[in-house]
Image (cartoon, rainbow, N blue to C red; front, side, top):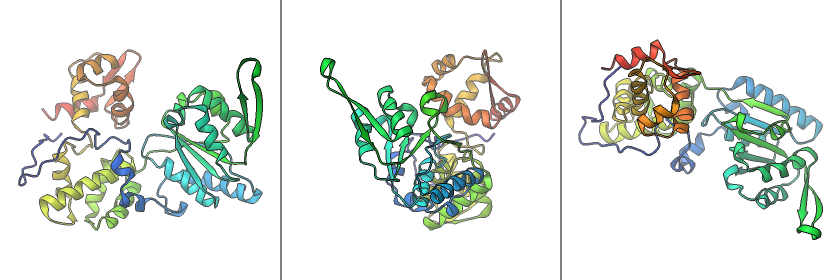
Length: 348
């Protein structure tokens, strides 16, 4: 493992530590309003790179719905952040020649919020709810009849004056997205006609995404450079594009160039303390902590030792370390694999 230095060594170019890790797949405000990122979104299924099996299944469902002249079945998309769940929802709506209305579960705080969304839908439209596992119980129960029978059953008033009112809804398609499938209640999960997992991307698919985006940024990438960047992007397009933007910053400020070579990418990522495996300082701190103990270590003990939240470590740090074979989870706790030990010890 290469020794990582926080000092760039080129001029006095200094990169501040971000609150969000560059290798974290969660979206940040900058990415929500970035015009280049919006332009990079595919506008048709044909332009969407990767997820071939998923696209094939969705294509059949879409064509069948168009043939029957009815809305597509309610669809649940699950997988890690940054893999394209939102993009797929908008593409489904476009293929169905209808609009996609976007909502996030944390923003739907009261039952009247979901009622307003449902009443605002038109025939055949798509309602996309991100982080659907975070819906509260009352809101979720209102969705049951809306999804099954396209109606709302509302209770008006209280005590003896309470009365039930039924409101018919236009036929619509609900697309839910989640990173935690197990957190969705069984009654809600069973009401989705389609449930599809979005897989991590291959190196070749990520390389193609990187090359396409580099053209929007007016960058000239070496083939080997784009492939090396793909290898450390954790199978996630969002991370790949974020890393490419940071490499662009380094190239423009430090090297005054639009040509991206293998060495330039290595130097740029070293400035962010990201090594050739795509691991950052937090990943290495986690591995180093486990390396001090040959016995399985509990997650709470690791979190206390690192001063981090156990939930963040479990859902943000550990998945990639497991994916590359550096970490294993046992009933007694977390344990480094032989590969993980070799990696962390080679840097000492």
